[in-house]
Length: 118
Image 1 (tube, one colour):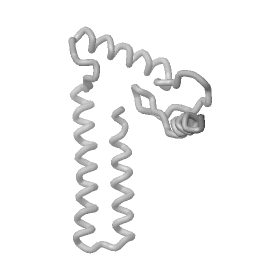
Image 2 (cartoon, helix red, strand yellow; image 1 turned 180 degrees about the vertical axis):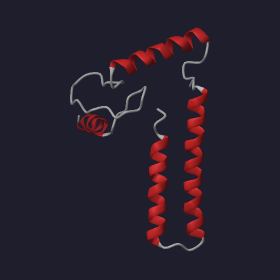
Image 3 (tube, one colour; image 1 turned 90 degrees about the horizontal axis):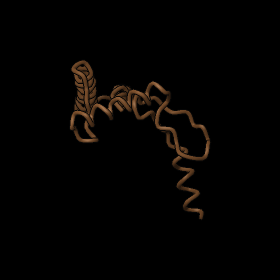
Image 4 (cartoon, helix red, strand yellow; image 1 turned 120 degrees about the vertical axis):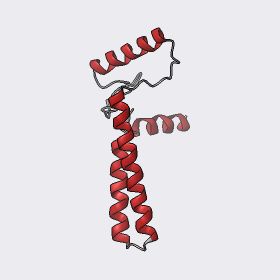
């Protein structure tokens, strides 16, 4: 019984995000099925997407992006690559721990921005 309790507790501790927009879901502490969406509009957009995927004959796990969303994703991926290259260049040039720490923090911040796509 202790293993089951530990597994449930660890699931409650990890942050959950909206299946549509990626915002962090509040920890309701309720018993039952966990929330998947932060609000009704997100639930509706997800339903519309599932219906469109079924009508279009795409696989259930297909990801559909507009041209603007794709361009934004590519821009954010480029920013992450540039930040990683900055860290690698600074390390090979013998940068100090303070500068490497600052660059690593910038890389982490940029990567967090990439997580918006959920």
